Length: 251
Image (cartoon, rainbow, N blue to C red; front, side, top):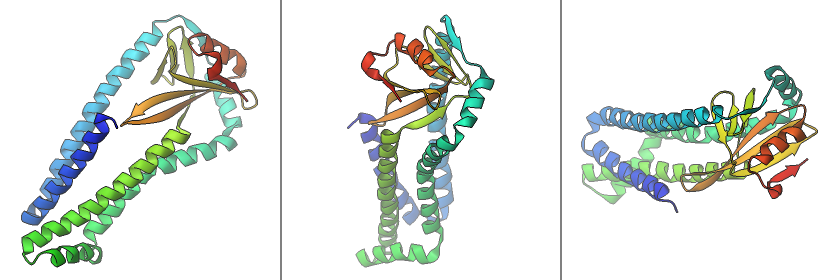
C-alpha cells in the first residue's frame, strides 16, 4: 500500500474524530468548521492542480520542441468521431456514471445531516452509549461521520477498481505528433517513450494509446483515442518511438 493512500485514510480518520468533537462541544459553530474545512480542502486541491498544470505545461513545451512527424486534420478527425459516435456513447456514459459516484455519496451525507428523522437514528446510538449529553452527542456524530467515512471508502474503492479495469477515455478532437511525444487538444501531453500499450482498430479508424498511471496506490489506465483515416500508419509512427512489438494489438 502506498504512503499517499495510508496518509489519505489517516487524514480521514483524524477529521472524522475532530468534526465529531467540534459538533458535540460547539454546535453553534458547525458552519464555521465546515467553512474552514472546505477552504483548506479547496486550497489543497488548487495547490495540487497548480503543480499538475505546471508539469503539463513543461511536458507540452518539451514535446513541441521536437520535430513534427504528423499533424492531424481536425475536420477529418471530427468526421471520423461523429461516424463512430454510436459506439462511443456507451463508453463515455459508463465513464460519466463512475465519476458521479463520489458526488452521490456527498449528497447522501448532506441529506442525512439535515433531515431530522435520519439524524435521530444516529442520535439514538449516542444516547444508548452515554447518559452525558455532550458525550452522547459526540458518539452520535462519530457514528454518523463513521458511516459516511466507510461508505466513502467503499464507493472510492469501487470507483478506482472500475477505472483500473476500464480506464478513463479521452477522445482527441485534434492532435500533433513530434519526435518527443503527442499533444492532444493542446492540453494533454503524452511523452515518448510511452509507458503502456497501443491498439489499432482499422474498422473504426482509430489508434488508442493506453497509459498506466499510479493514483493513490492504484494502477489506473488512461486511454487516449486518436481517430485517423490511416490507423496502421499512425500506429507505426507511434510504435517506432518506444513501443515494443508485444505492445501493439490490432482489431
